[in-house]
Image (tube, rainbow, N blue to C red; front, side):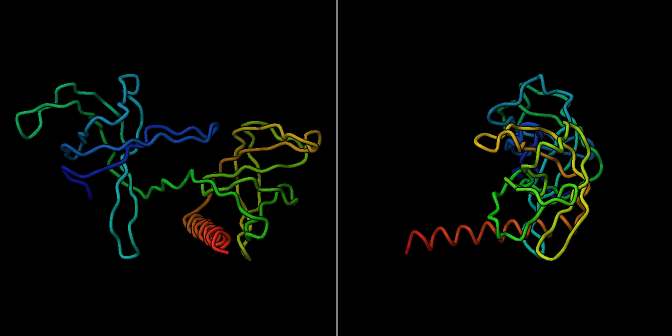
Length: 226
């Protein structure tokens, strides 16, 4: 374990794929042992309705290749109103019963890039190229023809192409949106969650997204300067 009393952590309380939102709140470690982690109350505070919820306590570790984020998964067991601190004071505290393992966690999961058409990222549904609205390592939103409709919760077989490499990807439909304008009768917009990206695919797509983001930022700066 790489956290200790005084460590700063981020609590991932909830994420909602259908709304594409993630609830991340910062806290400080008060105390911990093999079973429990005791944290400061967050801002905004976590309420008693969240007791029993599964949460991820995430933290940064400095590794050879740079900082990496890990998480400890557990359940919020209790909110103590007057937890006694090391001095004479008390504070509200969160008690989390932890599971024994830790794993890598990526808070950029929900960072969605709107890739330009020449980005090198291509997505195919039924062997037909779709128009990517945005994409992250967690999922994508795209438009496709209504004459091949999909339904919420359906599992799709996609092909994700990153530069010269192609991958078979399973994705679950989490939301369907109408398309406005003159293409409204022909197209629909679909948000999907990727289900089977392995570590190599995640690292490749994450690096590609960062590279595109960097290049787009450079183009914006160059355009403003020119």
